[in-house]
Length: 76
Image 1 (spheres, rainbow, N blue to C red):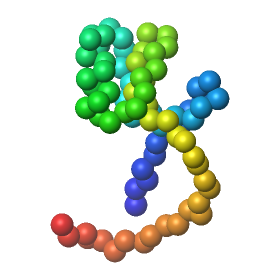
Image 2 (cartoon, rainbow, N blue to C red):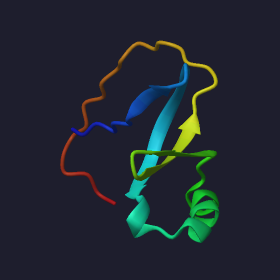
Image 3 (cartoon, helix red, strand yellow):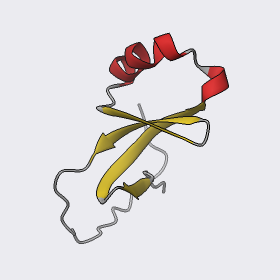
Image 4 (cartoon, rainbow, N blue to C red):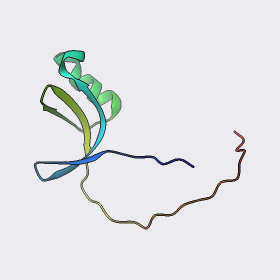
C-alpha cells in the first residue's frame, strides 16, 4: 500500500499545495516564470532564499478516508 502525500501550508491566510521548491541560487530569476508554467504551478512564493512553486487551494472539504485492499502481484 502507498500514500500520496502533499504538503499543504498557510501563507497570508491562504492555503497552498507545494509542488516544488528551489534555493534561489539554484534557479536563475529569468527561468522562474517558465518553470512555473512547465510544472503547472499557479503561484511562485519567495522567502528566505527559496522559491516555492505552489497551487492555491480555493475550496477544501473533508472527505472520509477510504482504503482499498489490492491483491498482489499487480500486472501492468
